[in-house]
Image 1 (cartoon, helix red, strand yellow):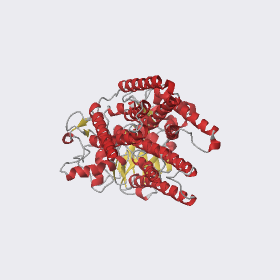
Image 2 (tube, one colour):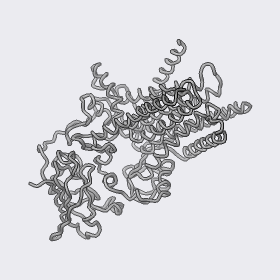
Image 3 (cartoon, helix red, strand yellow):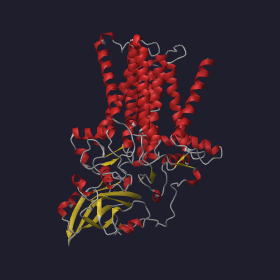
Length: 629
């Protein structure tokens, strides 16, 4: 017991040292005291939790880029999970007389937790004190490097790491926790570990919705492992058939608990359990706003075309495009159909594609070998091959829904591609262990093959980290007292919004950020517009055609409108003396009928969206009204 405690303490100190080194070497903490993210809504979310609120603010004037107004408050769209992690740390800091816990250090603690779990999982399993062999140490060391020094993640940590990147960092290290938990279950099935793993798999979606895919893959493989172990009468899981299904149901309930919590919080924040805020956020990127509210051409491109673009986004980024979101020739195989694309960070390259393909091929080989020996009713005879199959299977099962989602998503970016990081890292670990097991099977060649593999892995990992670039520069960290918080602006505003806006200036006078976005002061409109209205009973647009335009370019019958998530029904289109009046019925959902609400209007048909990336729509908006006087 004393040796076990000593070994655990060594791993804990090593994990803390790893986190400190990463924070310092990546520049996340450039100097003492500069351990706060320059801009993090997760920190603001944690502060809101400590005041008993779920929204960041109850004043629409506090809206900012990519935030949304919903549920009577300003909401962030990057998940509640990180705020839940930081809230108790903030509470502890306040008990100690500090204004809050540094968010860079909170991330460091999460990295240290992941590193400790990696040590417990792999060094106890692969290289225990009783098995001090070069092969075991190479196996455990390689896994540690691939997981804790994964090049795309290290490059992410060297970028500005605002709330966008911070979320992806937590996603990756949470993925590591799922990987290690799954490996522990595969090599030693236990009901207690199964329950913990199911709970973790369920709550991942609170950090980022795409972690739901990893959660399902984790849950599915864990259930299969427990079923097979029970069928083989494994001592730790052997129970009666009735007890087996009761315990599986208990694990399933724990898995569903996280999904239920996610659904409920989404309902409270956005009015729908299936909404994560991305159909409500405000942004100057109006093509993206249009695509997430109404429709978008890329949804309808052929399968082969969208698959080729996704491959290019993952492994063939040709150049960074800055704010040129709609430029061509950014990616290998890029479609010419309009889509929001943002690539300013090095992620993967073709070497990752080759290694990922090799890993999945190795997994297919192991499945084939098991299928040939299926009459034995057992997984592959090698315990290490069972782990390899679990890792590669997890990588494949989690990647498939991500591939399906991003093939048709209205926007694509480098940070979205980092959602694949846990899947690719698991595949690399599985491939590494596959080769280690092959070395074990051929002891006469083990030594030189082992050295060759270790050298190749070290060189590849080093080159990949070295080539990483960020178009936005290094991390932006600062002291707490110089941060520009999201506090209330000093604007005078009427107690209520008017019944209508007769020009864009009237919308801007409300002092609500992005109110009137897409509506110029001369009346010209973009592809869509963002308007904030109060207690809407209908939505009425008074329009005229811009100079040189015809109504057939964007028929008024195809103009669309939404209040929040609710699509409004177009009731009439009237023309009189060169003026068109388009009337929409009011919202039917009670939560959209009272208080300040975001309204979104699409002025052009979705199939012609590519024509209005920079050009204005044919329509000039003279008035938008939502209540009678």
